[in-house]
Amino acid sequence: MGMTKADRRMDGWADGAALLALLLLSAYPPIRLSAQDTTAGRAVYEKWCAGCHGETGAGDGPAAGTMLPRPRDFTGAIYQIRTTASGQLPTDDDLRLAIDRGLPGTAMPGWKDQLSERDRRDVLAYLKTFSAFFADTTQRPEPLVFGKEPGGGTSVDALRIGRQFYDSIGCRKCHGDRGRGDGPSAPTLKDDAGFPVFAANLTENWRFNGGSEVADIYRRLRSGLDGTPMPSFSDLIDQQFLTEAELWRLAQYVRSLSPARPPEVRDVIHARQVAARLPTSPDDSVWGRVERYWVPLVGQVMRKSRWFTPAASGVWVQAVHDGQQLALRVSWDDRSQSPDSAWLEFTDRVLETVARDDSTPPAPTPWPDQLAVQFPLAIPEGFERPFFLMGAATRPVYQWRWTSTPGGVREDSLSAAVAGLARGIDRFDPLPGTPLSAQAVYDQGEWRVVFSRSLATADTANQLHLRTGRAIPVAFFAWDGSNGETGTRMAVSTWYFLALDTPVRAQVFVSPILAAALALGLGLTLVRRAQRPRSQIRRRSDA
Figure 1 (cartoon, helix red, strand yellow):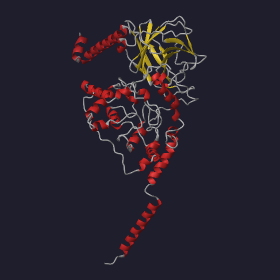
Figure 2 (figure 1 turned 60 degrees about the horizontal axis):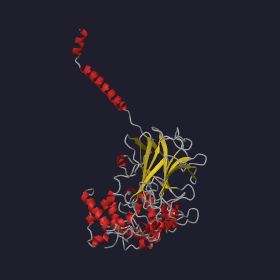
Figure 3 (figure 1 turned 30 degrees about the vertical axis):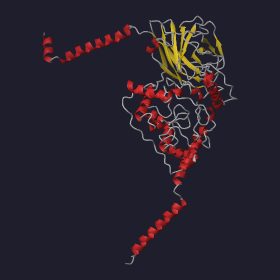
Figure 4 (figure 1 turned 180 degrees about the vertical axis):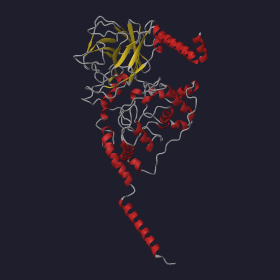
């Protein structure tokens, strides 16, 4: 049967459309979309990422020398935070989550609120170009499939099982008995590139770079942290050393070492007044009934030599007074009781890695641990305060300084603290004969120090007169000697306020109650009068 003119016209259109499609596909190969993504991603990377990760993605950007842990080296395609098995590439979702949320406990911030979704997608595509491993499309990364978390994770039995495996599979060797990263192997830890690595402090889950919940912890136990000493424990399940349920119990136990919620940062530290004896020992039972306040610390980066990697992330502060004296307790996690010669090699690696800010790294020395509590010389009337970084030559600040001693400071040692004037970050003038005492205890990765001093002082020219009912500015500084911290290399806080509270008089509570009762009685009387029948009211008026 012959073709009509209309049929030939349709065939011509079809042939033309096919030819046009062939030309388009020849001019723009299938990878064009990927090329567009990586080209745009490169611009995003060079603007926001290269400063740390380097132009070639090798983790050697200009800022890398100040960071510990070091920025990711993308060229080796070794990623810590994954849902895939140890030794496998991460999925795109893994990379996207790290870009969006960042990695807490490291210098990597979250970019979800800083970059558009398109920018984040493009930079993800560009990151994968740094390693040929991602070009192998025959091995698609597949997430591990996990069982469901068993219930009752906070029960005594569940935590007992978790603790049992914490000990038996060697977690305590690095993370320590209480999980503060102070295990016997902690001073020897380094990553595959030879950089020093801190064992994670399991009591601060808000700093876990892979997530803070039980499921996140379980995923790290199954996948490991490639490139670090943290292994995968999936093989122990394969070898039937433990079950998935028992590994879940371990994850639940690790989660139990941290508070239920991250600590809230508050501007005012309240010291309540007590009638009983003031506690002077760091382990006095009274402290268990005194509210704790979290004060975050950051590296001192304003004055040379700068310090970007402090060991202490914050301090817990408690305070009470009796109207005559103040007791101030400061506690913080510290992986070592410095000075400690066992940590000298680790200290050397830290200094070689990050102490290149200004000059040749100093030789490692068994430096002590230190703490400073800072006040103004006088309570300001307004909000004006001295320079927070230890005052200035023309406007000094009043400080209490505590230093650990060789062999450690025990409860019976009262000579480790001194009061003085700081006239800038590099000058501290002790005040001999000041009525300041301190007791300190180091216990399984934690320092606890109690300062005691009378509120009043005769030397108001050089010492702060502590007053009740006033907001007293206060700041904190900490040094970890085994982390190479001494002098200007330290952790610092901003100004907070210490309030010495006074008991509230009974009439403060009684007066509002009486006023409310009178108002209620008057209101009921008026309501009753309004509800009376008009006839009753008229009869009374006629009478």
